[in-house]
Length: 282
Picture (spheres, rainbow, N blue to C red):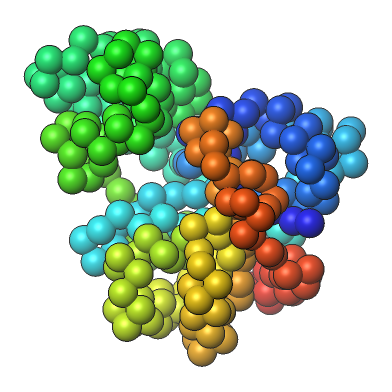
């Protein structure tokens, strides 16, 4: 069993790198990619632990990009060589942009009468402070009852407290990942263009022309019909296929590592060898 989409507490997951490695071993995941948002900190910390545990750990990243006016996530995988120093420096710039957004988000939430501070949120965020950490503080202070309610009322793009952060253009993110030694994949396409299939088809064609390498066909949020359609898109535009649970621990408690939501995730055994071959050609 493999899982190429997971998060640690170095971004918006709740498992430490050590806990994530232990969970992978417990459930029988043999090859795991850590794809934290904008940072390799979770992967770097987990690597020696994974080696000791006999787990194949793959280096990944998830980047928020701007594409056709919307926020679209891009995955990057470094299967044959480590990410370049230049890419790591660029990610530090993205983290700085996140902190600027967080300062503005605190100001907006306080305007709405919510008494929280950035220091409180950053205690939970560690390397990277993101909206799930804001949601947890709002819940702990009694402003909302659940993480989902925090997003619905205050933090989602359509909510009253939302503050836009700087998302890099998709074309730049694709090029940065490639120049940094990786291959790129469109993350959870079910969330792109509201999963309007004809629009999504045009988008994937455009992204392929920009140099994107893969589509994440297998994901916990994807129905069997979605998987079939995304797989057909990848074939049509000569793209590879990636897949993973998008595990976040307690921040997405319905998602299990390796198997998704109630066992709905089934990643083909040949997916990783095919990706390695694709990466070798890139």
